[in-house]
Amino acid sequence: MASGHRELPPLPVRPEWLVLQHEPIIEPELPIIDPHHHFYLKPGLTYLLDDLLADLASGHDIRATVYLECRSKYRIEGDPDLFCLGETEFVVELSREADRRGSPARVAAGIVGRADLMLGAAVERVLEAQIAAGGGRFRGIRYSTVWHPDPEAQGSPLHTDPGVMASPVFREGFARLAPLGLSYEAWLYHTQITELIDLARAFPETEIVLDHIGGVLAIGPYAGKRDDVFAAWKADIAALASCPNVSVKLGGGGMRMFGFGWHDAPRPPSSEEIARAWRPYVDTCIDVFGTTRAMFESNFPVDKCSYGYPVIWNAFKRIAAGASAAEKADLFRETARRVYRLDV
Image (tube, rainbow, N blue to C red; front, side):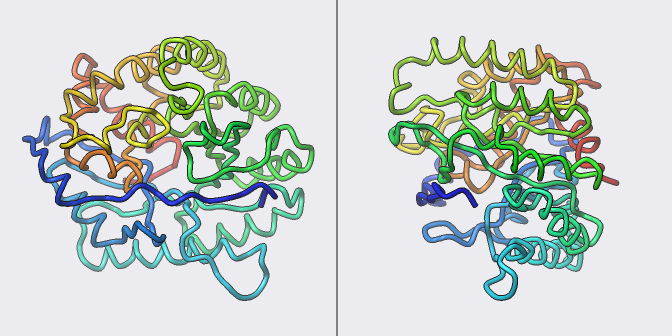
């Protein structure tokens, strides 16, 4: 773990506020794989199987999900390097429980866990243990590298050390992913995209997924500078898209770091409002990555502080309204199916 790691509390989910925005489901017949959700057991936010199943059953045709690590249910005894296996074991049990309940969606059909890449070559035994613990569901790891020198710009609950992706020991660990058939999930700020470009070019055989369109900051020193930030982000995103081993997730706009402020509004935003705000970012990503390397994501429950599950998928469907059937298939399920090698 990076020495600068700290964790801020997540924004709360307010069910009584979310119900103020109710919409009919757009294209309810469109099959979806949700490639990014969590199970949370943190002070101020709990989101477990019952919560997820209720969201999955709220109207859209969710066929499967991919679980992303969030440091839930780590082991507390034994080898500290293997504490992260507790999360994978926990998620596998919840996925099996969902199957026992007859969930129409395959919950956590793919799992992206964690391993400390700063272990260097020694991380290989952790990765092998994660694969074994995943029961055929383990697909990759996320090692968050979010860092910014200004505390007012730190919109993520996590904060690590600078320059991690260029570290020789990190890259020594990173080199163990591709031989084991594992992908790397990148969670960073837009100011760090150039670092990811260098990493992607150094390891062209490793599948990399950029979370949340690259963490575009609009708080702290970036507040009121959305146009300038967008221009810088757009140039870096285009350069990153030139790396054929990189895909992008389209979502995450409910987090405070994006600066839309929906969580502070008297009522939740409509899908039209969300689509209008997010369209420039999504359209840019699709233009440079293409639909075969882009996928919509819920980022629940983190984004649930700003809108409900039916509303965010309605927003994505509004953004994709002009796409062809094949392009919609990519954005809503096929890219996720390919990247995470899902048999659904």
